Image 1 (cartoon, rainbow over the protein chains, first blue to last red):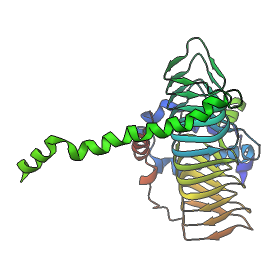
Image 2: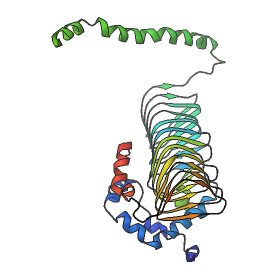
Image 3: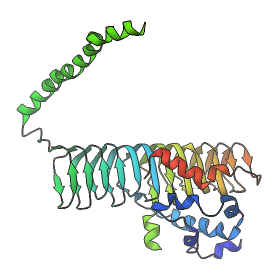
Length: 203
Length: 131
């Protein structure tokens, strides 16, 4: 059990370099060879054991890629890549290296990286200077820093109490908009004059 | 070092993920994960974690609940609070007293290495659309 005395700092050397390493990783040491080297096994474990006990904020690091649905009832920092939806987050920070493709719902959203998708915040949205965002923003409070690249529509929803008349009109407006959008699409297919011709040609 | 450790990936207890997670770095999971987990480093499954997924990693440390297979290139450690239901495939296995485990164990050295091949992992990541 000599490895308990191993310096926990050592594994850093054997650590795979972070983000852009996907190509490099394909080249070097064969995994079977690495598995046989006992010196590189133990310090690694040691390091994680010591840090595992500490309470840490939720972070998806640069080397982390996730696809799917993410629900966070706590603060979350994303420096990696997320494809999918993020819901019920408290304070969400998409860091400089972070990329999110998908919709985000949170209390507060701070963007320093790249986002493609709609952002919905119940409190505020901050787009920092390094942000690149493509999508709609729904938030009562917005801060857009100089240098941020943004493309989309902003909806700073009015407080319901201040504008009750507008709120009353909203449901009916959306109800009448629905059939307008769906009906022509449904009807267009069977009534298209060309379709009958094409059918007969095939037979 | 300390900065790196702070920046290391950690998924807190109130985090719920449903999908595929690929990581090039060490990972600490305290929350819930449903789907797949593929990690090039060490995965620590904390005591509050509930995983319903197969885990593939360099090494795996389990303190929490896992339903699914564990495959590690180097080492699997099941600590006393762990509850694991699934198969374990690893050249080196450590089980602490108190662990609840049900499943098959394979510590044969010819454990398939293909899963951990960097190229396979890179392909997997590309499939996920990672840059």
